[in-house]
Image 1 (cartoon, rainbow, N blue to C red):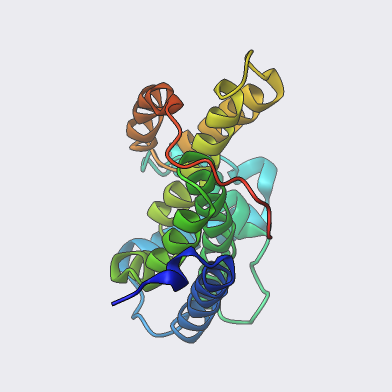
Image 2: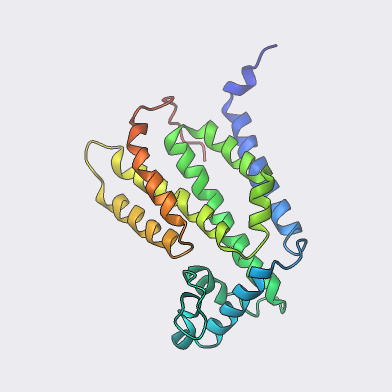
Length: 214
């Protein structure tokens, strides 16, 4: 059986667009499908407080007020911008997860493209769109989606910084900035930052097709 179509860039364009389409379709259709998760109710309350008075409640999740949950605040800061968007507080929070996860999908594409190549990046987008675990987390207003979505950007910036004749400091600063955002999303983000020390091992390029058909 011949698999010549796997060498056709047009085929991989369709894979990429299929992944994006499946992602948008599945995430939009399931925004209100999952019942409210217990932690979501707490996180939505934090978000509403921050929306009402940012100066007073900006660190409410980190123990800055009467609460002692010790949760990094980025999720609630971003979510506060969507409060009142639909008239349904749960849907407002999940819209935040939808947009940050779509941003993360873009990051996954860029990271895998830099690491392996454009065809592998297109496949990664499709696999992420189809992954049930990703769909489950993307459909809820919880911190995991924020970590999953920001970490690929940190890795992409890091690779761009080191894969050159000399360190490109603008990308290094970008990697540091996204590393800080990962930590502001969840304490376990430290694991993702720790894994970045393995990225210098990827200096050996797998494939040399660098054509740009985006």
